[in-house]
Image 1: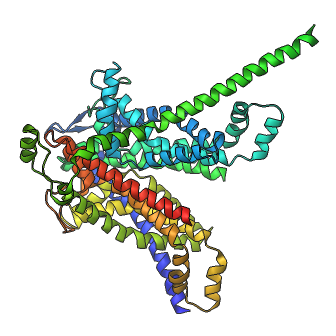
Image 2: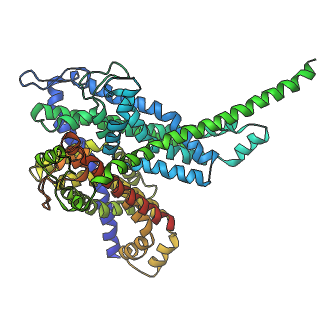
Length: 283
Length: 295
């Protein structure tokens, strides 16, 4: 009997690790971000001025927040039709055929490609392609980053959507077919309304992924500390500014970068929590 | 008149509907093929550009200096040296994170399995879900603040391992709990009915019968962290030499790719290194899928 009590306590104790790590993360990030918030207050979030020159230091995170949101939103918009089609291919049109097995394992492979390899491919293949299309002379910027981010988040959106679409009861679909509906009408009038919240959740979670992606965006966004002015404007995202400027940072600049990390942590946390809530409501 | 017209309208309409249906099907097929084409293009590019650089010295020698690479490129030779410092560094860092994350993750997974529906367990599960969504660069910052600044007083393999271990943890917790739920409850009860202490039931019944599920989860978690670059940039920094000291800066394959990318003389090496990394990650992926399918 005694050993059972010990086992129980060991398990309970291990669960504390999660509590400690989560609390410690917030505590450490907050603690090290305080100097910059003390100095600049709200201006840190709404200012566009990023100047690490000693004596005239000024840190505003707005350009990076704008860069992160614009690239991720663009990725979401590009990802929507693509992930939805692929999910329909896997879970509806070719359900249980070898076509869908091949397609879904290729989608899984996409999820396994490291971020830095996406960055290289984006830099050496996608960027020259965009230049050769005449869309932009350099090929860096919001559009290229958004496109590579879309490719990176498609697997997440696709696999979850496909799972949800496959769960729609057959009886409902059959009833619609019996009334003379075409397959497309079944998809839009039966499957979509039934799977709506699950599909929305899968795209919210994919969006959360896009917010925190670092390497690929760092290599493609152009790293200019400005608020992006258009689709082909360069910019900088929250994750990429940390990756780029961390090496030479100390003092107030380090505190500013950590504060950006804290903001990123909070934003992704909120987006993921919304996604999880939508899923929970579903089940 | 209307009675005669309506059926004609309907057939016309249904032909249009059938056409729309077909067009939509082809739309779905075409967009799906476009969606997966990047994986073919990426692997094709890596193999095409990378294979020629891979030879024995690629796996046995450390990275060349910029000067060596420059002379080789200037005289049109293959860049000498290899990435063995990165391979061994990746091995060290991943091994350390696995040692940290696997036991703790399995214990927490067991705890969640044992306390289904309880408030505290639900809180832990939600926190673990939130941890899974934390961007890897933020985990790099955390490991920097905790380990680099306070424990090793400098960039170190240990710091990178802590960041990657936090990344692995939620994945292992989730897969452990899901695996345990699949094991028939009667197995556990049979053990307990024989008077076996609970820790022995865990070690001799639960873990052995769930071993394929657990190893799938572990392999997937490792394949997820293998290619991580951003957190390592903030924690392990890189090292041109082979390093086995966990408190010293250490190289890793993704870090080397980043260095090569930024050094015009070594840029040719990015493809072979990426090919190696990709091959490694995909092999782990495939093995874990095989184990899962066998079950």
